[in-house]
Length: 166
Ligand SMILES: CC(C)(COP(=O)(O)OP(=O)(O)OC[C@H]1O[C@@H](n2cnc3c(N)ncnc32)[C@H](O)[C@@H]1OP(=O)(O)O)[C@@H](O)C(=O)NCCC(=O)NCCS
Image 1 (cartoon, helix red, strand yellow):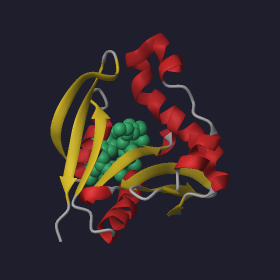
Image 2: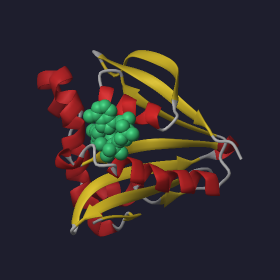
Image 3: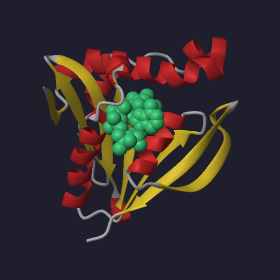
């Protein structure tokens, strides 16, 4: 059974592996030899420090999906000033894609954003990442912009947004 819950510090190593592997799944072909240099595995400490974080203006929260004690999904969401929010990161484990885990994580983020009465949620996706683009469209995001060679030369970025109505 898949369980969705808030991130805990002890998840950090597994999250670091999951994010690295999932980004590799759609970027390594595009970046080739440059992948390791441009997209290194971030440390577990990075996730411990950033997954649940709060400043005066920004609240960051992260959720994980667990199946039989194994971490199979991660999503990080933010609430900012001016009624803005963002979906910073979402990934499912390579063998667990297409099973509804990304959508279950999204529901959790949606509760977080609507609980704070946010107005607009933004995210972005590499234009070559058709699966993630389909995932965002499925969750009612619409394209707002297109940034050529944005995070990496050779990888264009689509800006997406979803307005929340009450
Ligand atoms: C994008 C990602 C998080 C989606 O998670 P998931 O658990 O596989 O998605 P779900 O099973 O909840 O599916 C939700 C929707 O996404 C779309 N989708 C998912 N997998 C798809 C696929 N292989 N092809 C086309 N659309 C797909 C569908 O619209 C689906 O809705 P439906 O089930 O009603 O058809 C996952 O594929 C992933 O981790 N990808 C690698 C990391 C990544 O690209 N992260 C985003 C970076 S911006």
